[in-house]
Length: 375
Image (tube, rainbow, N blue to C red):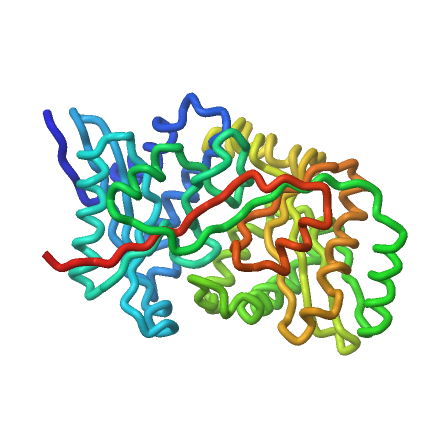
């Protein structure tokens, strides 16, 4: 039957696009499945407000009648305006180790980006920096966090064969948490007093909800200069609040305020959902939600999802306050292991923070780049 490519357009296409991962990784004990319905909705303009500033297409490659690969391409208008460069994105690429399949996938996505006027392609990147980003190139025998990515070892070889080059890497660490040293507690207390700060503690999402938009607004400010970041507008903020707030365990969220009650920093830890999502296998019902709820209440590992500090408070010991306060909760819950999500390899300050703990740097994700040639 040979090889063919199809643009994703029907409900069945969208489902096949998402379900291909489940087939590709079905015997892999490290892959963490997404929630199927959420993934399908994220690809459709009826549900995802990112389509108001992004254009995108998705394709499936079939070989001998079976799905053998998938890819998407995105033109983010806000990113173009911010950088002034015609850089498109490839996204959600998954494929069997077959040169024909990979060539057809990427040549199709690249041609569409060229038709949109793009001169360069980068990826994997999503609609925003809170969407899927990065391709795992190291750490294939480690379980990723729910907010990270997992890919097969041959992906790196295929990208290099296609002429893609490294743009930037994200590093991921596992930290081993012990008792808080007395010195660390003294420093944290001193920074709070010196800068006239207050720490917010929460036990329910109802208590946390009034600060949700403030957290994302601070995130926009703190992350503004980072690679691939485009500020989230109010619709995107509402979208992410609705999608993720109920998955939080508020005890693992710490907020820092100044003397005028202005939010100046936050840290979001999330009890690891990786094993729970594996048990759910893409479905919240009938039992998936129970596994997730159990993981949120009785964590073994905590994932560090996001940290944000206003620029004027960076270098004032606020990071130490955040980690110290979160560490107290982890010790209370007998959590000993922490997974960081991706940190840019250029973010030496954050990396040095983690190196103050017993740790391993065990995973690496890459953003690839390639100049597009109009043929």
